[in-house]
Image 1 (tube, rainbow, N blue to C red):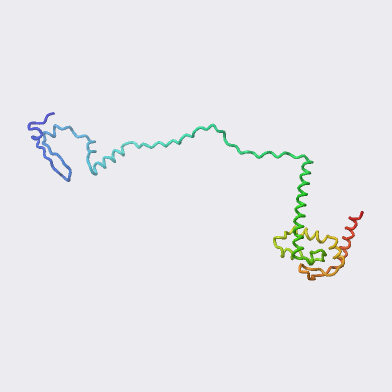
Image 2 (image 1 turned 90 degrees about the vertical axis):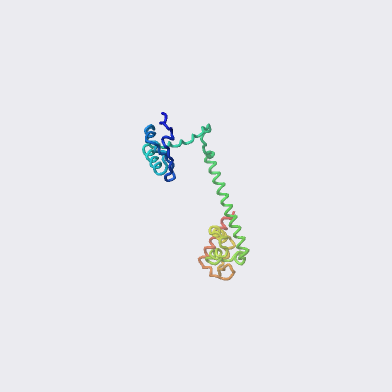
Length: 215
């Protein structure tokens, strides 16, 4: 549509500045020729009006939920699941083999005990030669406690008991007990007496030993 006579100039276009925003004022004839404004044209407004229009549009649109992300697919593998290696089966022993093994273990244990007793005897001969020398003397009652206090952890309880049992069963020690007299401590000083019952028991033990070695 062409503008009326006089063109745009006849419409008397006047540019005004209101609040920093430029607006156009036209004549009534020009305004009648223009199409009716769309309600969505208000979105071109700036400031609070544009913000309110944007919020209204967002409220009317349906909410779109984000799709969950898919887990990455595991790559295929041709390997079989690993299995733990089983220990080799222990071969079953025959009764004869089991008895032989047990006998060997017993011999090894007895040898270890003898080795420990011999080591303790050498140690006592060095620290208390007065009573643990070539000529055994009757030992003080409770001398095992004195030895344990002297050697500490070096004298294990079982080894100490076995050592004293072997020492006091020797023929020369039994003869010293059978003769009676005083008993002695580690320092070689008298510490008690051999009783008559103890002397008699030692004499009977000597007779039993003699019977064993007799042809």
